[in-house]
Image: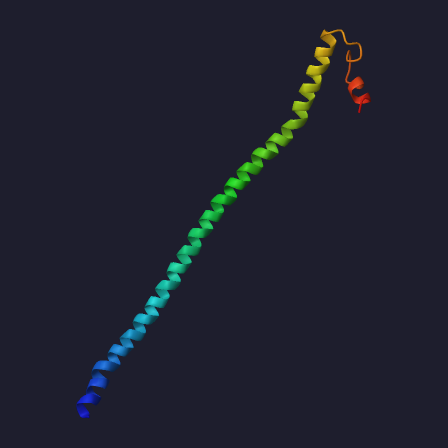
Length: 100
């Protein structure tokens, strides 16, 4: 019984303590790995957001260019009407606006 007590006290108890410490360390490492995985996902989200903002910027530029493009189209139509002798199109954009 004395040898069993010595073994439990001197052999098993320190081994159990070390296993508890190892378990705690592994738990902390798992937390670190989880935090790194979340950080990695956040980076992917930032890249997706950057791409979406870039596309939104291109769309905004295209929308901003529409009035100029429409003006050019109307002027071209007016000039084409003038060169073909169309009296309704000659001189201004008023005939175009009357039809609206």
